[in-house]
Image 1: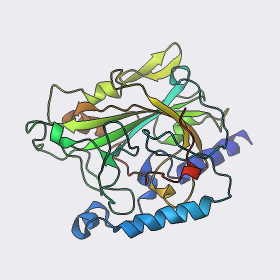
Image 2: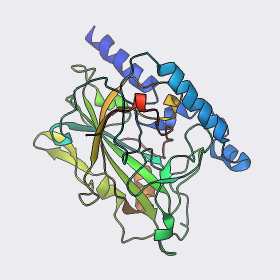
Image 3: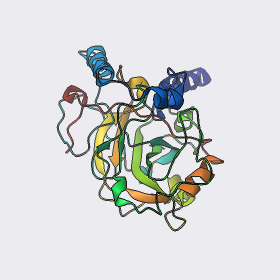
Image 4: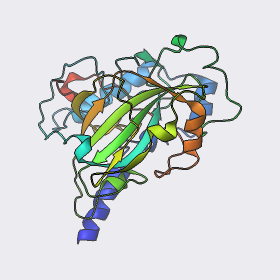
Length: 298
């Protein structure tokens, strides 16, 4: 029975477009090429998705959702769940990243556009006008290519360092956040937004995504400590598959408001081999604006 229970829990998480927004983006058969050929979807498409989300969650008892504007503390969702412990008392279970920030606020407030309607070419970005011509110089090869395109200097990425109260070790997919002993662990995501630059002297992503055991717990060791006090709030899993329905998963978030520069070549090297089998950027969920789906930030 124990094996059946954990299998069901893992299946439920993996079937949902949880943290890694890719899972909800497969509805667009043409991916980035389609978006490039036809341009971003109209505002009415995003408005319809927001309307569908409000309708499907109304009176259904969903807890607060993510992502959100971290500069706005307002929220009407009072569904209570226990805040996850500090990430230093939990195990790192997964690291992945999204192209453009899912959250809005701090130094990432420029809307990237509606995108393809499935989570790609949307989200929020850093102001590239603050970067030098050298930092924006094109690379000689593709970086983390996928069906939805590759990364370029000047791109913004939001990295999710996912932590779990389960006794696990870091690995691929959200299944790594669960164990046979705990199928419903508390989850916390330490979040850092980066801007990609063509500069070998910028931070190395291998170092930023490094992890090791500290006092018996798996911990990320490279999250910047100089990017502002994290905004902490209660929310949910993300990903474009939740654009029209609520996420039932409860997550405590810690989102740093300032952006750090990272050497784009080091991101490309990380995509070619890492503990998490991550090789490309994931899509983003529409920013949640419905106050009935947002918690209050203390």
